[in-house]
Amino acid sequence: MKLEINGISKTFRGGYQALDQVSLTFSPGEMVALIGASGSGKSTLLRHISGLIAADAGDNQILFGSRPVQANGVIGQHIRQLRSQIGFVFQQFNLVGRLPVLTNVLTGGIARIPLWRSCFRIFTAEERAAGLAALARVGIAEHAYKRASALSGGQQQRAAIARTIVQRANMILADEPIASLDPESARRVMQTLADLNRQDGTTVLVSLHQVDVALRFCPRTVALSKGRVVYDGPSNQLTESMLRELYGAEADELLSAAPVPNTADLPVEHLPLSALAAAA
Ligand code: ADP
Ligand code: MG
Image (cartoon, rainbow, N blue to C red):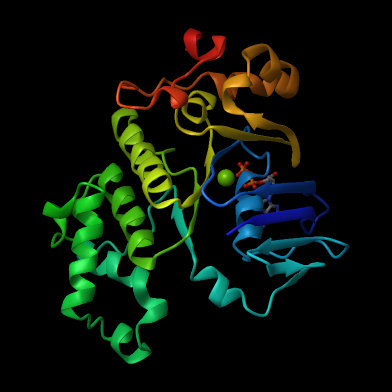
C-alpha cells in the first residue's frame, strides 16, 4: 500500500519544532533509508506514520493505502486496523525477555487471534508452525524455545523482524534497528530487512544514523535536518560534499560510522556506487 505524507509539522510543548512541513510519498515495495543526525526528527516522523503522535493542527495528513493514519492533527478512527498492517522494529528490540523467542514472535499475529487465546498465549499448531517458519526465515529457528533475553542483540532484532512476518505486515517501520549492534550483526539485520523487501514486496522504511548503510541496502534515501527533508532521491547520488553542504558540522556524525562488511552477496544495484562509499 502506498504511504502518503502531506505537510506534516510538529511542535512539541515548550515550542521545539521537530518536524517542519514534511511531505513524502512511498510506493509499495520500496526500501527507503531515513537518515539524519541525532535530533533531526527521524523517530518523530516514524511515530507520526505509526499514528502514535498527532501532528500540529493544520491542513495535513498521512494516508496509508487511501485511509488516514491522521489528518489535520487528529489520529484516524481506524488506526488500530491500520497499525495491524505495519510492523515495528526498534533499536532496543522490544521483546519480552523472560518469554520464549517463539512466543514473542507469535504475538505478531495477535490482531487475528481471539483475545482470550492471546491473553493466555494459547496458539494453534498452525500458528506455531508459522512462527517457526518465520524464525527459520530470519535464520534463528534453533533459538525458538530459548528466552528472548538469552539471545544476542542481533538475534533479538531478527526475532523482532520475524514477529512482523507473523503479523503479515505489508510495511515495516524500523527506527535505528542497528544502532546498538556490532557491524556483522548490523549487516545481517539489514540483509534480513532487504530480503523481506525483495521477496515479499514489504515496504521498508528504516531510520539510520549512517549513510554508508543507507547506500548499501536502500535504493532511496530521505535525509532530514532539523525536521526538514533536505534530500530525497537515489542513495547512490548522495555524495560526501553534498552531505557536508546539507549538514554542515553535523555531517561528521553521519559519515563517521564504521562500514558494514560483506557486500558481496548484494545485487549490483545495491552496491555502493558513489565516491562516498569508495572512501568509506
Ligand atoms: P532523531 O530520531 O532524528 O534523533 P527525534 O525525532 O527523536 O530525532 O527528535 C527530534 C527533536 O524533537 C529532538 O530535538 C527531540 O529532543 C525533540 N523531541 C522528540 N520527542 C519529544 C517530546 N516528546 N517532547 C519534546 N521534544 C521532543
Ligand atoms: Mg531517533
